[in-house]
Image 1 (cartoon, helix red, strand yellow):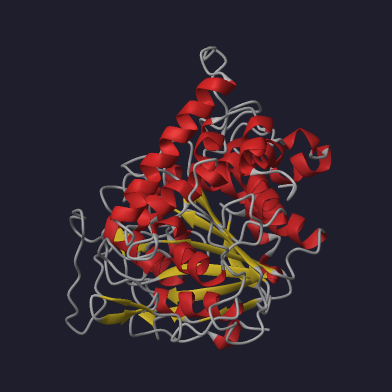
Image 2: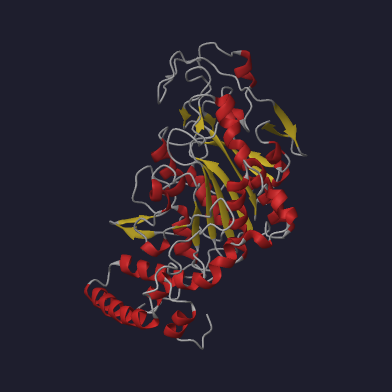
Length: 473
């Protein structure tokens, strides 16, 4: 914003949208420093993060973790031996071993195994670092999503994006520091709980934006007054602004410790600034034909996720620090929760994201952005090595796969392994380790990023977590 303009002039020039309405009555803005309180703990490798969250539980033995043992014992009773208890979350009668119906091949100089459902991702494996023994405490979607996002299985804790926002603040004052792009079909399990600021100041929660699935859709509602609102005039706005200013000042004086009002006002002020910046961010018409083809933006199956990936890249370019893109809504279908038929359900989801994700990595690399951008691909848990019904797989927190790419990551590497069944991890890696590693790459010691809450020094990694140094460059 031009420093020569006062707030009221700025409001008039932005056309009097809803965000502008609140901007003028802001009681004052607290400038968030762009460094951790007291300075970063060490030089960062990453400046920004884009996380790709596959909602529902991606089957590891059908994507990145082939298990020949399942081929040999297909349709036989699953028996891991030693009297180990085998349990099913949502009923898998008989526990019959289910081989993967997909062909695996090795790819790249790293020789990484990838199944046929991810042909485009197979072409970029030498840019990725795989965590092959991720583990969760739970086999339940909501709890698993909370754990992967917040480090806890219960609600009420800040998610990773909120912690990063709290620690590092804004890069661009005209855009949020933490943006969530959900699947157009709906929010994931836990709805907005996955993006919560918890006990951190409310302004650090994720800004949820509908990136749309078609050109011309409005990604952010209420940035501008509707065309039919002819009753909104500069005079009526001025009167409304003065009234709101008085009401807000009175509330702030009565309840100085309530961060919700501050967060609401901050969000409205941000919305006013986004009246100028947001339309350009979401306008993909200037993207080249080559870029559209790279992501599959014009493909029937890939358009939705491609749009969000390109929008995420454009946000990173313009100073958003943390972008989270979701594939799949909550519920029994149209996500990665493949209970009924792994043969058809998994390819359906993989085809939507495979080309856009590979395109994102290639695009970031070609623009020189992968050097200071961290890309994280994950899910809340994996799936069982035995069948559910005839051809589905049940939830499995025992092992799943995550991969990272970009800033500070050693490409073409892999850490950890699962057992011969793909049932449990050997030397498990937890969300605490993943979160510690992400914070480390951002210049933050996860043990020192704490907030006192209810008599406890809380942190994203709880009382656990180690930086996974084997994947660091």
